[in-house]
Image (cartoon, rainbow, N blue to C red; front, side, top):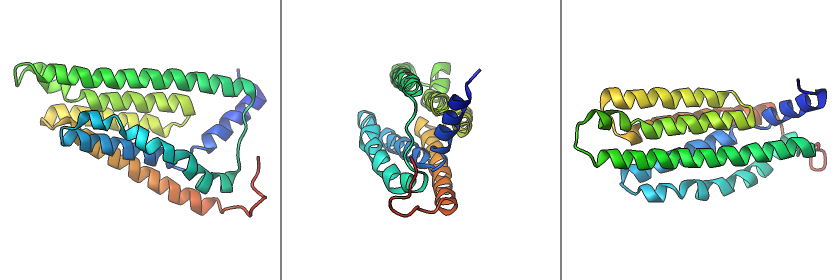
Length: 200
């Protein structure tokens, strides 16, 4: 059972992800990986998070914090959050790497085998797992929806015989558009506070 203070912190953390910035950056990363995959430059796709993630903090400082202020969590909550974040990121990276390696291992087998039919969905399902892990870390339910989108797209890839990047393009575009819509709604509903008035 969470304490009253812990519940307040959890609500604040959830509110701070309502700006849609994480959705936009996650969608852009997915689209960049899809482009790399399409042009057979898969190793370059691994650089997409390295290129995009540094934009997140400045964008929050520019868009979000002037409207909601800066939140400081308790030491206990901060420790749990950082620990869970590290483990989740590690598991997510290992999962995605395993998915990529499995895909390229299986596609070197004889063509049109049953393994090749389902292995094309592995990248999409890896994104689904990453979205689910993200939802667990930041306590935002819409990322469960993103996980469902990638899960369904993986099934479509298998059923229709599409290439793996199809799911990345469609899923990444959906996440980016939803993020942009959330950002617009956030800006409209949270006017920027005058300098010196944003809360802590």
